[in-house]
Image (cartoon, rainbow, N blue to C red):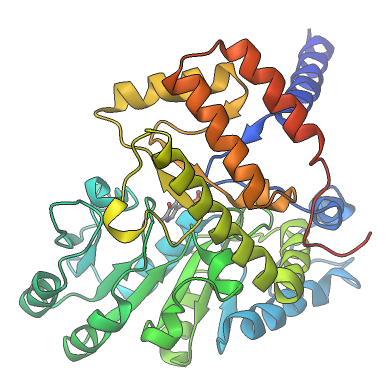
Length: 396
Ligand SMILES: Cc1ncc(COP(=O)(O)O)c(C=O)c1O
C-alpha cells in the first residue's frame, strides 16, 4: 500500500508537470524558477540543518550561503539590513508585526475588499486593526482620509502594499504623517518585489518606507519564501531580527537549499531584473488594453488599467469569478477566481507584447464569442510550445 501511494504521487507529479508545461499560466502569485535555482532546491543542502550557534557539524560549505544571499539582497534593494530566513511572505510580515508591536498596539492596513492581504492575526494576537480608506472605485486610496486616520489612531505600524495591486500606493504622501505619528511605514511588496528589484514600480525606500518585505516567488522569480529589508534604521532591524534568531520565534532551521536558491535568484534579478520587469509591465499593459478593446471588462479604465504585472477582470461576484476561472481552465488557461491575471510567468518564458495580443484574442474567442474550449486549448498548446525555455537567467 505504501509503495502504491508513493507511485501515485510520482504519477501525479509527472502528470501535473506535463500538463502545466502546456498551460498558459496567468496566476499573478506564481512564477518559474531557473534551472540553477531548481538545482539548489533539489540539492543536498535541503537535507541539512542551519542554525546560528556552532552546534551542527558538516557546515564547511553551507556556512557562507546566507551571507551571499544577504549581500546581494542589500545591494539589489539598497538596504542596510536584509533577512532571508522567513519561510514565506506571510512569515516576513508576521516577523515585522511581532518584532515591532506590543499587545494592543494599532496597525493600519488595507482591507481585503480594497485589495488588501487578508491578514487574520488579530484573531490570535491582541492588535487593533484599522483599515485604510479608499475611493468608491475600491482600488485608489483616499489620501486625505488616510492622513486623518493615521493622526487619529496613533498606530505603531502603517502597512502599505496589497494583493490586488494595480497602481502604486501613496508611500510618499503617507510617509510624513506616519513619521509624525511615531509609527513605522512597512511596505508589503509580496506581489511587486521583482518589479521593484527591476526598478519598474515605485521604490518604497526612496519614497519613505522604512521596511520592505514580501514573498520571493511572485514577480520575484525565486524559490517559495520570504525576505525582510530595512533601509537604514538598525534599531528596527534588531527588533525584527529577534523574531528570527538566536532563539527564534517564527523560524528555526531556515533551509539552506531555499536560501542558496534565493541567492541565485537575487543574482539573476541584479543582472537581468530591469529588462525582465520592464517587459512584465509592458506585457500586462498590452494584455489589459487588448482585453478591454475586445469587450472584456477590465478594472481601471480611469488609470490606464495597470502599472504592475496584474490585470483585473471585472466580475460581479466570487461565484462568477469561479465560473470564468473554470471556463479558462477548460482551455488550459490558468487564472484565479479574482479574476486576477499576471504577466510575470509568460514573460519569464520569453513572451513579448505581440503574444499578449494573441492571448487577448484567445480570451475573446472563449469568453465573448463562446468558441469551444477544446479548440482554444489547441491554440494555447501551439503558443506555449514555442516558449518552453526560461529567460532572464545565467547559462547553466
Ligand atoms: C500582499 C501579500 N502579502 C503577503 C502574502 C503572503 O505571501 P506568501 O504566500 O508568500 O506567504 C500575500 C500572498 O499572496 C500577499 O498577496
